[in-house]
Amino acid sequence: MKHIILGLSLMALSTFGMKASTIGYTNGTISRTSVFRMGSTTKQGQAIRFSREKLQTLKGKSISAVNIAVGSRNTTGNNAHIFVATSLEGTPIAEGDLSLSKALQWLTYTLDTPYVITGEETELYVGYTAEIATSYNMLSADFDADIPNCNFAYKDGEWTDTYGIGAGCANITAEIADAPSFCDIIMAHNNLDGYYTAGKDYTLSANVKNFGTKAVTSFNTDINIDGKTVALKVENVNIQPGASYSITLPELSTTTSGNTPISISVNNVNNADDDDDMSDNTYTENIFFYPADMERNMLIEGFTGQTCSNCPSGHSIMNNAISKYAEIPAVVVEHHSGYYADMFSMAEDMDYLFFYDGYGTSTYAPAIMVNRTTNPLIGAAAPVLECTSVANAQNLITYANSNKPYVSMKMESSFDEATREVTLTLAIKPHTNLPGAQNVFNVFLTQDSIFAFQNNGGANYCHRHVFRGTVTGNAWGIATDFTPGKEVVWTKTFVLPEAIRSSYWSDASLEDNGTDPSQVTWATELDKMHLVAFVAGFDPANNSANNVYNCIETKIGESYTQNGFTTGISNSVSRDDVPAIYVEDGMIRVNGQCDRVSAYDLSGRMVDGTSRLKKGMYIISAVANGKKYTKKVLVR
Image (cartoon, rainbow, N blue to C red; front, side):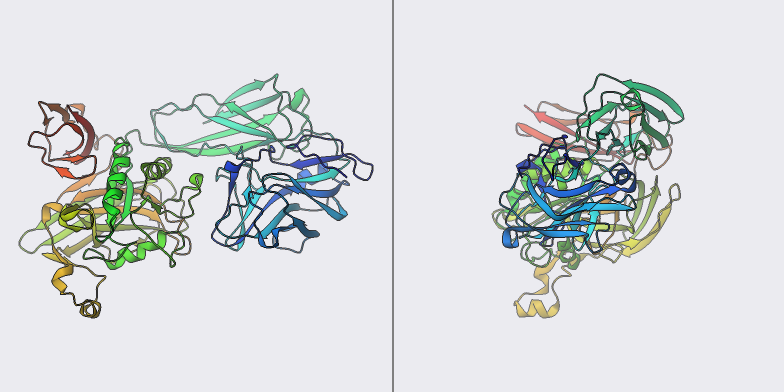
């Protein structure tokens, strides 16, 4: 028997003298760029789920074969284990091994005995598993619109719904003997849960997918936004089986922050309510609009070392990437770990190696992570990536910038010169529910512009944003319940020492290395000491589930309030109070009242902004009225 598979198109196949149709969710696209893997284990797998409603349409019909496409055939024994089951954790109804003769092509496993769909099943899964080295991407999908609770992948010991990760639908289909001709529109993944602010207009789209075996040529759409319904008629289309279609929604906007409910439903398919399963024709979402002046900072953490010869170039790469996104405020912290420990390494720096892929086996520097977020769109398996190209850093920044901030913060600090006591008050205002099962806040102490040895950088290299420990006393922060609209306030008083010794090196280890404690101790300078606070998810079992939502930075003795912490009225700065930054005769000029002005070249090195600068691009940072302003300027 010869099988010809093309997406989900209905085809007449000779299967025991009956017609057979390929049923699934994929549009049939197979590409080298559409393969991936999930988790860190060698076991990989994919499955698709047929709901009770869909099985009713196919009641009495037989599954005769399973078709799959994989990204790599280099599995143990070059086989994949095919299964048909009523549960992903239960005993399969049918199973067997399929020889993977080729990758990136459709392969067919024929069941020894066709399985007859009774219609009594609550759900049915069709899929495969295999053992494959972690260097291979085995999983294959169409990277089109995906569907909730229909596509699954095996990840680190359990099956997980791949809805929302951007992979689309798994390249798996079932051959159904003598299947009926039917229509079935599904509301597919709609990326409406984004970062929106009040006062802006947004044009969004919704996706539908054809699960049926015949084309959809027309349908009606009812779109309800904040209680107002708009009816759209979609005609003269040709949505083939497995294909998706994008509907442009009416313009979405609001002048106030808060939740805006939206509902999208599809009906009157092919002008005749020709849809066998209406249970998945509606999509509902609450879209949250943040305050119009909402401020969100990204936490960019670098990993470096004094003996690392490539780290100076890594610092330049990171700073160049940050400079390309000057409109995205960033707070930078450098951890002296990932390479050999040095005089600045703190005990917590070693804890943060948790964010590397393969934690406990190998680490490296220079490296970068942004908001402790893993970017699956570039195949990243962990938040930390090598900082060896501007593209790597830019990919992390742009992906993290699409995430929502959830909270706004205010940080106040004072310094007593006589006692060197620092009093810190951190206030956190959650705008909406935070996504983490557990959430934390933390406060770092950093020191900027330390001039010391750096391999490939000289004896007086400028070490920026050096991590000097946590103010909370915990590497992972303080677990807190965050309730929308209810402020969380935390106060801490501590003594800023005149010098900070590396907490990584014990007395015994220093003695073993013949190192005097003074060699791992560095004097603190008040005007270079900063406090960095952030709110993040926390999961000690999963290094990709600790995303930072928002962060804030201020010098010790100063205070800072993010826009969005209040309603935006008392916290706003009038246009007259915004400093004007410009270049005149090679000099940086700032008009307006400023508390502090700093100038940096594109390598991130602080320069003397009060003198005439060489030709080139510079980043100017000004603090006025408790607000930070950043601007790129060109000296000609």
